[in-house]
Figure 1 (cartoon, helix red, strand yellow):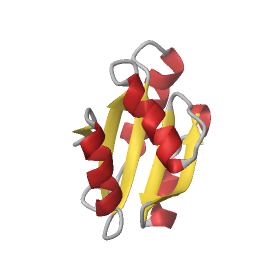
Figure 2 (cartoon, helix red, strand yellow):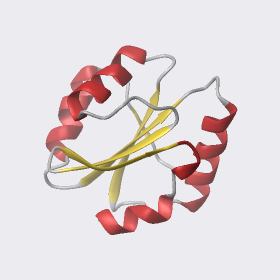
Figure 3 (cartoon, helix red, strand yellow):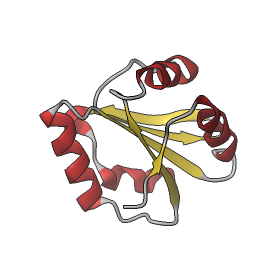
Length: 109
């Protein structure tokens, strides 16, 4: 999977603007959590929308302030792991933990 690493607040502003023309997703991942590791592995094995969505990956341990900004900017409760789908600068879908399912994304393309 060709993740774009989300490491700077400026990228958050850019992906929000980009979401007005393309579907964007953010996968928030905790490198210290086995549930997060399993959710990421399952998501990557099911993901088949390469080129149809722009996938961003956030290591929320390394970039906790950015994770908090995402929760604040998009008015969603912080979770880990967490998947957010963004269209037209708004979160149209979010899920966490075992509820993360790549097949659901087709609805939002």
